[in-house]
Each structure stands twice: as C-alpha cells, then as structure tokens.
Amino acid sequence: MAAARGEFSSRFGFLMAASGSAVGLGNIWGFPTNAASNGGAAFLFIYLFLAFTLAYPALMAELIIGRHTRSNAVGALRKLAPTPRVAKLGSVVGFAGILTVTLILSFYSIVSGWMLAWLLNSLASIFGLDAVSSWLTTDAESRNAIFSVVFMALTVIVIRAGVRDGIEKWASRLMPALIVILVLLIGYVLTLEGAMDGLRAYLVPDFSIAMQPGLIISALGQAFFSLSLGVGTMLIYGSYLSSKENLPVVGSLVALLDTGIAFLAGLLILPAMYVALANGVEIFSADGALVAGPGLIVAVLPALFDTMGSAGVFVALAFFVLMTIASLTSSISMLEVPVAYVVETYDAERGKATLMLGAGIALICLLIVYNFSTLFDLVVTITTEYSQPLLGLFFTVFVGWVWKRNGVLEELKKGYAGAEHSLFWKIWPLYIRFVCPIAIAAVYIQLVFF
Image 1 (cartoon, rainbow, N blue to C red):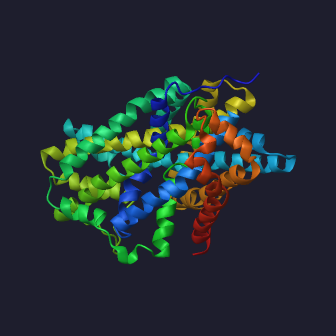
Image 2 (cartoon, rainbow, N blue to C red):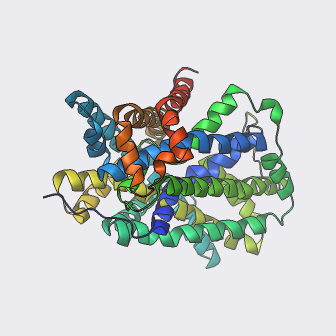
Image 3 (cartoon, rainbow, N blue to C red):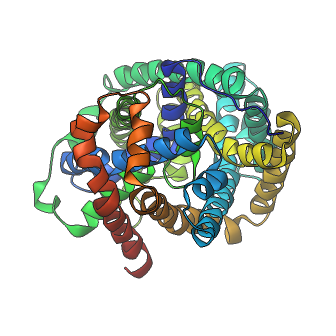
C-alpha cells in the first residue's frame, strides 16, 4: 500500500513554495553581479526575455509531468515511458536528479550555515557578546560543521511535517517576510552615498556587448537554473498541485515571482556594493570583476555594515534574516525530492525517512567541511554546471518526444478547458520539442568545451 500523498491547499501556498524554491542564495548574490558585469540593463533585458521564452516552457514541462503522474522524479519518468528501455532511461535520469539535488543540498547547507552564523553574530553584537561574535565570524571547521548540521535540522523539521503543515505553512510565512525585508532594505540602502552609482551599473544598458555569445549563454543559464529546473523540485511540487489549477497561469506566476525577486535583489545588492565602495571597501577582485558569491556576503557586505555606525548592526540583522529565509525556502524543496522518492517507493513513514535522509546529507556536509579545499568547489561544479543542464535537457526530451502530445493536452485541460485553443498550446509544444533542448544543449556545450 502506497503512502498517502500530500497536496497544496491553495494556489497561494503553491506559489509561495515554488517561488521559495526558486529564490535562493544564488539568486540574491549571483544575479545582480552577473548583470552588472555583463552590460547592466542589456543583460537584464536578455535575461527576462529568455526567462519567459525558454525557462518558463521548461518549468511547465516539470509541472505538467508532476501533476499528471502524481509521483516522484523516478516514478514519474517511468510512467511516461512507452517501452521498458525508455523506462530504464527514465529511472537513470530520475536517480541522477535525486543524487544531484542531494549533493547540491550538501554544499548549500554549508553556505546557509554561514548565513545563520552571521545572523546570530548580529544578535551577539547587539547584546555586546564580543567573544561569541568573534567565534561566529571566524571561518573555522568547528563553526562550519555545527551550523551546517543546525541548518539541516531546521530543514528536516519543516519537511517532516508534510506538504500542507510543513512546506506550504512555512513557505506562506517566510516568502512574504522575505519580500517585505527585501523592500525595506532597498529603501534604506538607496538613501546612502554611492547607491546611485550601483543603480547605474545595474540599470543603464551597455548594448555594445548585449549580443555577445558569452553574455547570451550566461543570461540563458541564469534564467533557466534560477527556476530550480532539472533536478525534480518543480516536478515534485507540481505533483502536489490540485487538478483544478490552470497550469499555464500558475507556471507564469512562479516565473514572474522568481524573476521579480531576482530583479529586486539587484536593486539591493548593486547599490549596497557601491555604497561599500564609497566607504572605502574593496568590491572588485584581482581580475577587475565585481566580487560575487560567498565573498560578497561574508566579506564585502559585513564590511559595509561596519561603516554604518549604530544602525549597521540592525541592517546586518535584517540582511542575514533575509538570507536565512532564502536559504531555508530553497533547502526544503531540495530535501523533499529524495524524501518523496523514499516515502513513495518503499512505503516509508515520512518522519523516519526525513530523519534518515537528513542525517545522511548532514554527514556529507561534514565530509565537505573537513575536506573543504578539495571537495567544495568540485561538488559545486559537478552538480550545478554539468549535471543540472544535462538533466534539464532530458526532462524536456521526455515531454517533447516521449510523452504523447494528446496526453499532455488532456492534463492541461483538467484545469483549463480551453487549453487546446489557447496561444500557449499553439506555441509551447514546439518550444519544448525543439527550442528548449537545443538551447539547453548549447549551454551544456558551452560549459564543457569552452
């Protein structure tokens, strides 16, 4: 007897969960600096164009597969397969997705642990606990190990509670809080000296480089992978979506929320970096590029907060609350992928499965922490630059070439009776069959060979 599956109770709950999955640390620190380093508004325009012409169709593929099969990634692709050989391929792709998202969550928990430590550092600073503050901000193996495990424990607590009482409940609380904090921080930072220089770097286009192949590939990768595509997270969330929902509409709303929050992140991060520059903080690396990634979060911005006087510690607290929320809403979607597989395949009790998998991922975190220089960048590169693009390609192939066109249409019509005559149906099948696989393959070839 299969374990009972959960379901989102409302469209709002699904949108908060799905957008929370998409809006993570990479979106907040990666997108703004990527835009500023690649033509400002020119990159932004191309990113938005590709997000809705390529990433959105791929997102729809995962949502449709998920809702139709009501299954985890492995089971879903097997159900679509017309022959045993294709079913085996589906199993391989599904398992690869589970392994990839597990490894992503392993290094993601380490970085998220840093965010949690810096959040607590802000509180320690407010209460004058200098010794505690010093330990929290020291990049030591013991600190990284403790907070990686603590962050995984928070993720496990949410996932153990299930779809409605865990994922939906917390996403519905955390995502509105994230947006409010983000908007308030933007409002404050824009009042500071140097902020307008950051806005110009972000919003003034440099069309002389807008059509360079490298920029287009970079924008396509940002658009496609910022939506958490390729590893089964959106497929799983789609499987918990009511049949009454209009999939093209909810899919477009997820894409709008994700790109909208990414845009807002740029309005915060780039002005903040140039405010830091105006205060004597170095924001460029040795090769002249803007500092991005963890270095931006644990070096540049904390240095900026230190220059703000008494207000700095409260701005830092709000910022690291924002980063911790972004971390958690993404991590819960990642952990749900292997949990759903174990629960549905082995009829396991959800609480035990979550604890077992959470503990296993925590052990991988610790392995990376204590072999950081060897493993961290290696795991990041293999999962996000090589595995994810290839898996995304297979998902589009399954919908565009393996699943019969009439089956896709019947699934769409469950929540959208007029789907057959819609503009979406006239365009999307061709995109998912031809354009998306070619575009994703181009990204993969660029990453592997250039």
